[in-house]
Image (cartoon, rainbow, N blue to C red; front, side, top):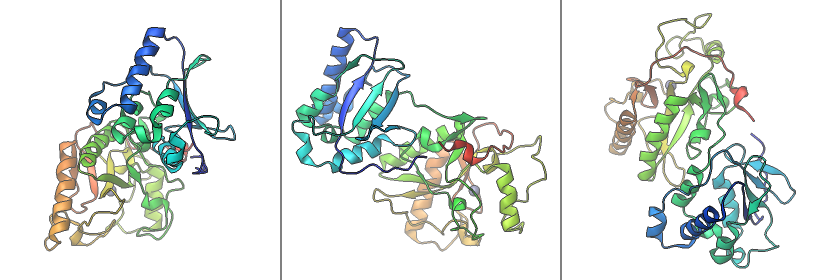
Length: 337
Ligand SMILES: [Zn+2]
């Protein structure tokens, strides 16, 4: 992932570049976007998905001319954050002083239509788009999703999900860095279920934080070598098994997760991650009422999305809806940009 080094002071102007659109469609789009950006809140929420085409590249071009692909290195949320930090003064007369562009480009398209400019000049995009509208906009674009042997990046499916891979740091029970890359990867179908669960949590003001997801088979060996105790680590076979699969981290069908609130603070849960005591059981007695309520919510929502919790680890969920598939050894580095 490229370093995210944009100056937060940069202001943004937005331009929609596309091709093959009739004047009528463009006018309809303009009307919809003006409504979405400047209308009353009720109307905004009811607005249908903007009929923008798929297959466009979406980039943020910084003042130096460098382009940052959205949904890859820079998310739309990050751009919106930059715009918010630009301050109220930038809402008025968005013109030459605006630096950087959010450019929506159709493949090979040279024609452009300054679709958003009217809205920006009129009411300020940074202030006009609420999270629902950003989602609406985001849904209009076909994201470029890197998929290798059925595995995808969690962030490509839902970049609101927080990735905090403990094994990519020394902050884990082995005290060693096991994963050379901190990229959260998952089997695509399992990831789609995780996104469903996250949607439900988001409605409650909560977000999933991922501590572990797909674990390449050879990393399982590294984990075992770092901590060769079968009570805590599954000793891998010398070669990946050829049959008898079940949902595990090694086929991207298991996730270790917790929940955070709107400030990013982790909710109180029965224990921390990789606590190997009996207190880590979701059925453990003696946890606080708050931890009980939080873990019950976590489990019930995850169940509704097709997962089952491990009996000894409240944070570990197996995808029990999908058909278990072979264990894989695609390195996490393959998912870095
Ligand atoms: Zn786990």
